[in-house]
Amino acid sequence: MNTVSVVDWTRRAAVGSLLGLIVLGLLWELWLAPLRPGGSWLVIKVLPLAWPLSGLLRNRMYTYRAVSLLVWLYFTEGVVRAASDPNRLSAALAGIEVLLCVVLFTACAVHVRWRLKHSPRAASTEPTAPAPATP
Image (tube, rainbow, N blue to C red; front, side):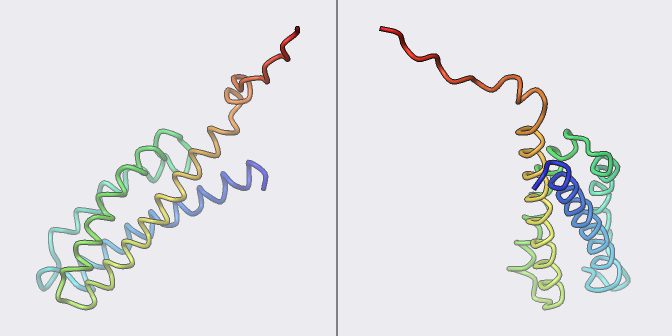
């Protein structure tokens, strides 16, 4: 695979899973399985997810790094709610949240690693093979 296709693939996976987390959070807390009938204030948890969307679309390396850390808060929430929520629908939605978080983290990690490995700076700073010793 060439660099452009890997970067494009990881960007699409990251943006898609981030959008999925935003939509899931809105649907979950407003209509599908809110903590209180009529919706809950827990819906504001999706606001921090909206911040990195433009950075991911612009391929900003800093945003990919930040999202790879931020996503673990949502992963933790999903694991806790999947394991402890008595509402089966809510537990299933939490499982989907965990899956989307894993996809998002993987896409961000691969994206950052690939871009760093194939950057012009990395090519110029690679160590060269040591010269053979002369007797």
